[in-house]
Image (cartoon, rainbow, N blue to C red; front, side, top):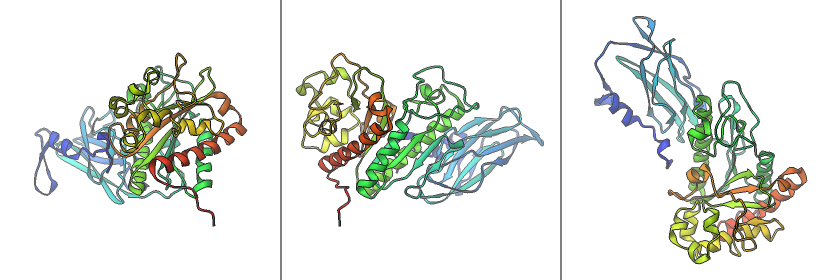
Length: 405
C-alpha cells in the first residue's frame, strides 16, 4: 500500500463533504436545483499502475451548459489518486481532473457528482511488464519497470518545451546535461552484472517547464499540465519503491543529477547539509542527524555508525574513490569545507526513508568533466554499478550479482 498522503483516494472525505453516505454506497446530495452531468472523455481502456486518465464531464442546466458549477470527483473502486477532487466548470460546462490508476489489478471506478446527478468512469489497471517503456500524458514522463531493489530517477535532463505549458519563472531553469543518457548507461550496467533491470523514471520536460525535484509550487509555478506531469513522475516512483519493498523488503533509490561546481567530484546527498558534514563524527553520530536523513532506515539497522555510513571505509562515496572516482562525502574527502555542496531535493524527502518505509535514497550530483564525454559516462556508469552492488551486498545483505555458470 502506498505510504504518502497524496496517494489516498479521498473517497470518504469527498462523499462526506458533499453529502451523507447512505446504504449501498448512495449519497444524499445537498439541496439545490437539479443539474445534469454527462461524460465527454476519459472513460474506458486499460493502463498500467500509475498511468493517467483525464476524465472530463459536461454539466447542463435545463439542457444548456452550466458554468461555475462544482463537480466532485471521487475514486469509488480501486486505490487511485486524483489531482483535483473538486473542479469548477468552465464556460462550456466542462470540468476534468487527472486520475492516476492505483496499484491493484482489475477494474477501477471514478465517480463525478453534481447536484442531482452523477456519472461513473472506469478503467482496467494492469501490472507493468519489466523492461517495457511506458509514457505518460503527451510523453512527458517515462517509466521503465524493473525487478531489482534499485530505483533510478532522472529529473533534470528533459528537452521537451511544449507550448501548452508556460515557462517557469522561479527556481533553477538549467538542464543537467547528459544525465538522462548517464542514467540509461547505469541501468544497462546494472543489468549486465545482475541479469535483472532496475526501475527507472525519466522526466522528459525541460526544466523551464517542470522541475520534479521540487515541491509543486516551485516545481510547476502552478501550471496545470506541469502539475499533471509532476504527479505522474512521483506516482511512478512511488509504485517502483513499493514494488522493490514488496519483492526485497528494502531497497535503494538513486537520484541522478549534474552540478557545475568548481571541484570536479561526485557529490552524494543524504539530506545532511554541508555545515553538518563539516562537524566531527561525534556530532554527526547524534540520532538527530540520522533520523533526518534519507537513509534513516539503513542507519537504524546497520551496525556501523552514521558517520561511517556516510564517509567511512564502507560508504558509497569511498567505494567510488576506490574505483578512481573522486567523491564526497567519503573517507578520502569527508567534508565540503567552504566549497559548495548539494545535500538533497524534494525527491529524497518524498522517496527516501526519513518519514518511514524501507526504501533509502541518495542523490548523486555529477561534475561536468565526468558526464561531458560519452566515454567518460560509460566508464563511470560501469564503476558506479559495481559500487552500488557492493553497497547493496554489504549494507542490505542483498547479493544481486549474477552467479557465473
